[in-house]
Image (cartoon, rainbow, N blue to C red; front, side, top):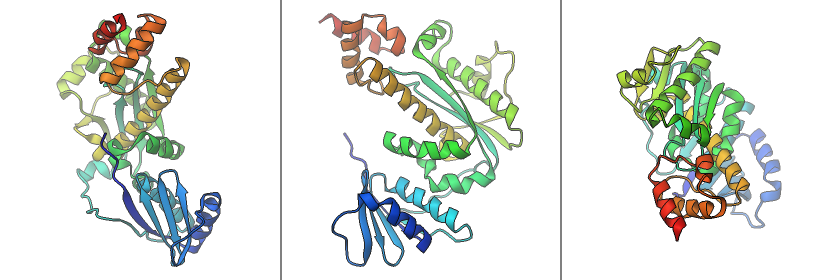
Length: 316
């Protein structure tokens, strides 16, 4: 398994933020501190060092998440101050498609379509120009690179400020719908419903963006039986990199998916793996042996090839 890279991020903070950090890390401080440091502490998989000069250094897999949260604190306490945050070894990224990126947007994205276990989760979010700076401090443009732990950490911050609407399609309902519709058709139907809900509530938008999974004409063809169809959609491949409302939707969807997987794992007293690999087959066969074949209809997407492999393994 490929290890997550260790990041080093430096953030210059004010005395107000230093005081907040000192109090927050009181129970997490290490006994020894480097020269000229106020403290050094452990925050999950991040080592945080605060120096007397006001320089805060975050080192670890989740360094970007922790640094961004304190950057937001600094901004809240000192709204007129320019935030000085540096990432070691990182080149400044150019923003793509600035017309969309800097606009008021409603964007949607989904999670769970490639996972054998667990539901399909589709979310649409509304992001205004005023939200851009806040979201950038959380580092959500790299949503695909975030670990589950990072998702669980930053999503509560996002949903406090960003309006969203989510549909969670459980496995039993998916398997029933899959008798009539293929995966992309189901996705189109769910995206359409979430977008309609958001455009009904929030009408001050410049673009409606969908992370493209089908050609435009194919997408709308999937919706030919729908009574109400959201039009004027901008379809963008890898839209989470170019549109913050799509990035928010991807993160919120993943957050809900993680929570749903945890619920199912707890219910059946076994850790359900994500994806559709060999481990999925092994866990699936254990579940079938214990609960019978019908269990798959409740917790899995039975049209996946994994189902046949699980049946064979369960015979042994």
